[in-house]
View 1 (cartoon, rainbow, N blue to C red):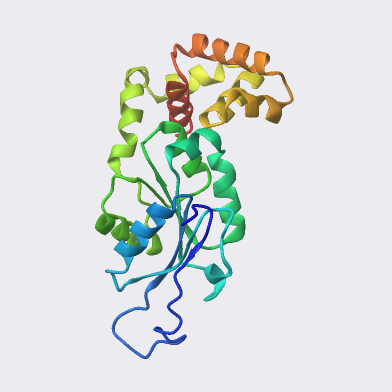
View 2 (cartoon, rainbow, N blue to C red; view 1 turned 90 degrees about the vertical axis):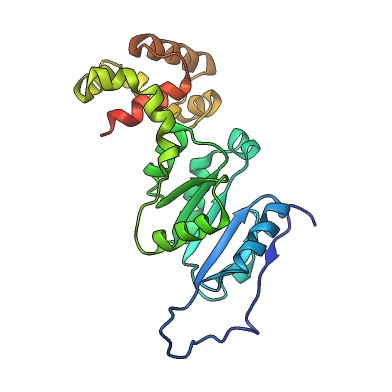
Length: 243
């Protein structure tokens, strides 16, 4: 199976368009966006064992099939990203695209590992569910149910890195954290905001209309002024300053 191909899960012959009166609610319609055909097959097999979830389609983000809209907007859209995609693509752009394609649908982001910049990006795009691919299928299904019910689900392990890199900030206090950010110039703040959103230097340069070398100069100045050593700490500091 080619990874770029869409895997349509059409159960139209098995399930009527209208469900008879029942104490059980109709299943949730779920669309999975995943570039890996193997991952899509495994996810589909896991969902088949749960009658409360109906997988309407599985596809790569650029191969979303018409079946995804056959029953109207899906209740849940799951975007699963592998490490290579996160390194090469703009996560924020993908979330924005899904929000435009599926307005009103609850979006769940599944990523390989927890990083503050991804938490920040998810929060900025009002993503209701964020987890890692280490979660079991049963737990993932439970996340779907909670998100559909209007809950915001961010497992504690995703914030471990924030607690680790934020120890110094906790000692400083929230006011001091914001004070440190406020000492940045307007341009440095813009660079920090985009860096915290996961943008690479080249994308930051394009966004602000400056050169790559100028971006590097600003980042060095930010690190020195805030007493940071890497981009993860910078993302954590920016996120903490927002609360």
